[in-house]
Image 1 (cartoon, rainbow, N blue to C red):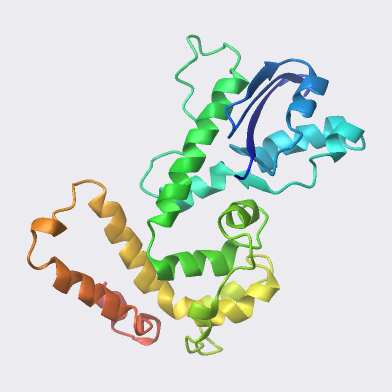
Image 2 (cartoon, rainbow, N blue to C red):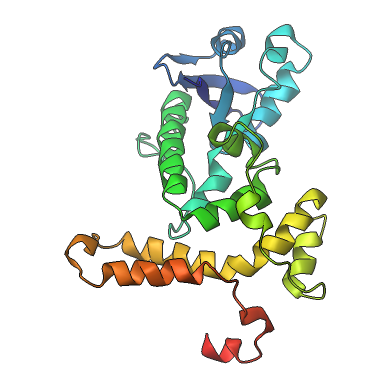
Length: 259
């Protein structure tokens, strides 16, 4: 079983010093301590580090405080899973994506890093379940475009330890070279350059997959009645048929009026 250490730090706003550490492992072990050595020792044996905004917050302070130390070296190269960027990707209907601080009695009270680490753990498994429930085409698109980016690399490494399988999208006919979205995905500031070839084949399916994603989110608001709906098989057959051909909306001058 893959061992994930879910971590959280409490940092002084004024001094930028780490005041408190909290972590929980998939094995159930926990730690809540102000001692850095005890915290770093606790992380030994982990296969992944995970946290909410861990890339831009926790890892930045850990590197600033401990980079070069033997204890830090033991885990600084582990895959990092950040639940914050995953939240809007997988739960776009949510109005916000910060961790709830419902355990704080006063607004100026210090956060409890162990409680926040446990909340990150719960959110992570919710995100894994949400991702696994996506349609196969949408998962292929997300993997092809995001698996090598810093914010999502650890998550896809956890789900797909082997190289990301994109054979199911490589057979898609590429878009025209002058398409605006194609230029967007070729922009090195937006996505890694090596994703450009995959993007050419994936983009025609984006409108279809996102439509299905929206339908899935809409169904979250009401229980499924497929088992009692005689028309459900026909609806699913129609959805599957839509995935057999890329959308032509981007080349259709009338599409904006239709939508």
